[in-house]
Length: 147
Image (cartoon, rainbow, N blue to C red; front, side):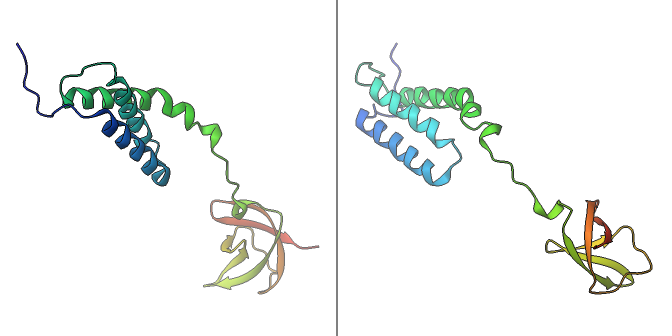
């Protein structure tokens, strides 16, 4: 019994061209998803020179199946956590000088572009004084007088 295909056989050159276009679009998107389906289309396009698929939907099923297998098999290896660079947040690094100010009766220190609530205020603080930030934790800054 022969089945009637919904799509005519897709020419090999068209499969390869669409695969290359998907890979080209992937360069601009950078999600590493279209790459795998593009490779699947290219593989089926090259395979079409040697195998008679019969109908276009069979070609597309094979191409997307290959793309899905490649996606799940190789994506983690190419986009590994060790490939990403850790970004140090200088905002949370203590040890430098900040400027004191008072807002609504609370002492704040302007440090690394942010106002931090002073966690250990004392009586000899003055607005505009330069102090050293020793620790930043829970949106509060621990300070000591600059020597």
